[in-house]
Image (tube, rainbow, N blue to C red; front, side, top):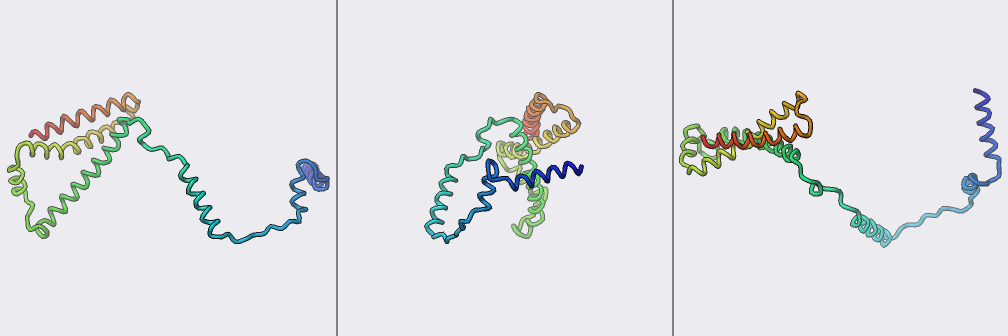
Length: 184
């Protein structure tokens, strides 16, 4: 062990004492250099030109990839719509609860069941169907897609074919169920 260290130290001493040749020129030249490094203040024109150069460089840079360059997939849409429907259902629940509590004080109208039923019953049939469909579609989609996620938690239907077949099943079940609920 000591002989290896002595050999290494000997090589280091030998390298330090050899004339500046080959690989050692740069090290020796830097050590023996007598030139001074001087600094000078930059003018505002230099700063402006540097900013212009940086701006041109940024303008020439390619734009990072965006989702529009990829082919849309069913899995993208299902994931996005699941999150959006979850947020919409939560906002509707909280908004309805807040409106129920504050309506007598803010609007001067009570939101009891009888007034809601009579107001909704006075609407035309097409408007009632559309309103029911608008309310039932996010709920049914979110519920069926949640069941799909529970199926995935059991490690079933995780293949590409299984993911797409369950995705189309969720879409069809959501449309059929929400259509049925809207027709009631």
